[in-house]
Image 1 (cartoon, helix red, strand yellow):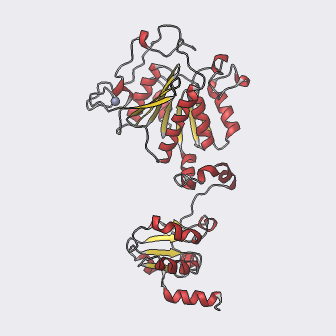
Image 2: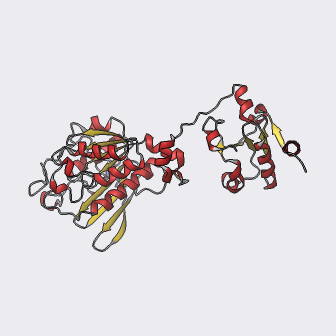
Image 3: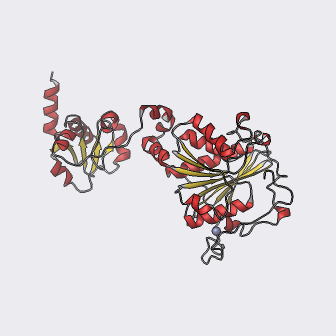
Length: 387
Ligand SMILES: [Zn+2]
């Protein structure tokens, strides 16, 4: 019967133990921290990945499919990493080393450490369902908290989009809307309520978001987007735009600005029972003008006062926009770039149409003909829904 000490010295004798200098000389080595997450959060070695010893066997083949690649394992003082090295050898890894003295010796020698940013216990609880998804995890959640998303419109589409983005922990949300909450909005604009009737939509939405998630900084622009203010607003630095504009002049302005500022736009529109979503990503896919180079004549423009909408429809479309926004912010999945997703609520069907960039597009084409903002004045045959 051997004691822990015996077992450790026996294991040490069977594996390769290297000091920091020798470990650092290993070309292309994978550095694995086999400690627990709370130890990792106190600081770790540059370029290392965390695989707690308890998960090592189950995760190593995904992290290091090439069993001949050099691997440096470390822990606090070199004991757990020694046992881990033996395990990896048994799994067929041929160039495995344990860092002698672990991170404690490393620190004593004054070598470089990475102090990771981490989530507080409160945030860890709030975002636990994100942390459980490997594609998001803590790093992804920190990315979301650092993200800045500008929402054009705090109405039908902006309501679900802003609520879900706020709940997901997108750290900064910009809201652009000049309107006041009125009773006709409440059939679908779920970020507003009876309590905020008569107040500016941006303030109403900010209030709701604040009561949902204090992590979110809401920047409000109580103004109608025009050629005069769009550069000022976009210059404040946004990672992406969620366009929930209900009118063509704004849609064209947002499009042209997004191409010139190189900001992806998650576009959504709704009419009666039908909705559309796509992502316009400059340089990677078409822009709005690739599809519609110029606005339609007023009599064909369906937005404005006469355009009815099923109350839940913006919930579906705005939620898909929020989904695309989160994917873009996280850098995961396949964005709806060059793909128009059409939703027909009456038929309960989704269809997808491929969209292509038009090399002759007046804005993002090879020889652009539109290089300055255009304020299209009036499109509605009838009066606008809101002044
Ligand atoms: Zn274009």
